[in-house]
Length: 277
Picture 1 (cartoon, helix red, strand yellow):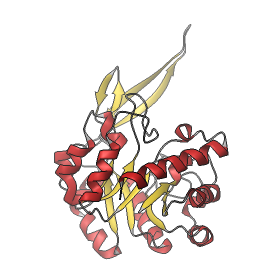
Picture 2 (cartoon, one colour):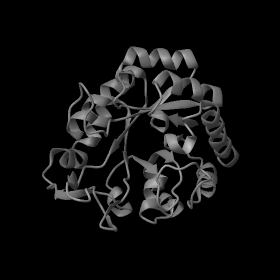
Picture 3 (cartoon, one colour):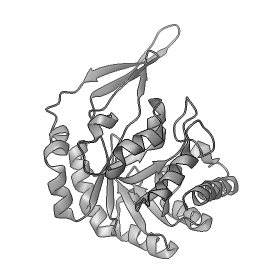
Picture 4 (cartoon, helix red, strand yellow):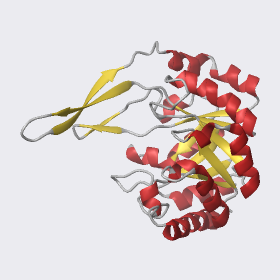
């Protein structure tokens, strides 16, 4: 199954994303809970799904710092996302890794103003860290759905790669029963998605597919350096039973023009269908 993430077009309203996904021919939708109230109202989400004939195949727990009406902490947001997924019939919830550092953003006001980022470490005793290690399996079993932990990108500080998350390596990710493999995030580390897939294959329940061009994440599938066609063919050959979600950025889809955006969505779907047989 090939799905479209609503995060690919976070600059659009949710109904418009469902409409474009249906017109392009996608099999389903992954909903990211974000600043849009529509993204967390179960009755409306069920109505969109029915109106456009697109099942909601995954719900992404919010990763924005502030989502009105939702807890501010990662554990609270995940615990709130699970019952929402149950209400809308989504069989899978995507959640991020716990933060290792927080970045304080600031600006130096002088003759030439400068923006800066100040990293602050977060200790392992943070509740979400311990929950993922000790409570995740129990939550999954009680909810009757899959919770897939997503690998995260590197961050840049003074030109250097910085790991802002706990468990953010292929070896450490092996401690989780289910994973979301994000290809563009692997690209920021210079990792080969095929090699990481081979190592984590038994745990991968969901895939976020987009390219990385060496600077920008979430590029169109043919716009970058990652071997995405080879990965899709390998998934097909292995009989991968999960969903592949196309998750780009609005700029990669020419979202300022709806006709070009629709054409870009169609190209991405054709790419997936060609290689994921």
